[in-house]
Length: 210
Image 1: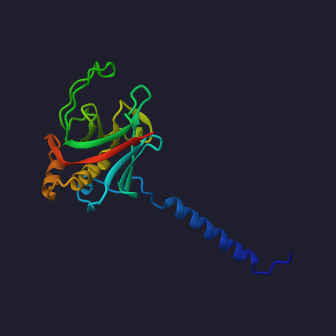
Image 2: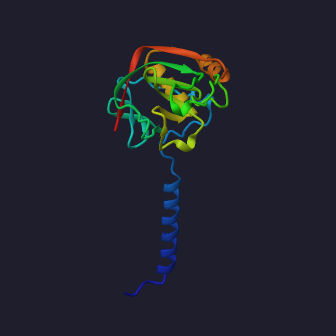
């Protein structure tokens, strides 16, 4: 086949364009929950009231999905229970949460040598908020162990980045009809050594599926 004289230049332009397009595609942000950059911004995000607000934890995907009926509102990466400590499956109701929770080691062999941790303590594994879905032992909570996300590493609970857990807690509160102003949230984040319990007047449905 005889190619015109302009063929090499056109081919070079096409190659550069395809490479640039591929680079843009790789750099394009995905909705993995990594949107807000600070705890303060996590509680300042606008929250939409959903008509059918529910949560779904997918154990296979290691994701938590925030749903409005069949519409996906947000998704977050999570860590789930290890094989020896599986996360319970089924349908549950979220009725309360604790911001800046303390931690008391459970009566289990894995926690035999651990010490209780006060709210905000560096060694507190609960992070900045825990959201109960099967009381008293199972909850969604923040963690500083971000390397565990996407894996089965917990003792049955669902771990999230602290930023994501804080954002999720606010979404749950708003959609449960709990009214708190911006000052309440900012003060709660600022005073990390002070626990605040919130009871939901309207329980939020959550499903944990295989």
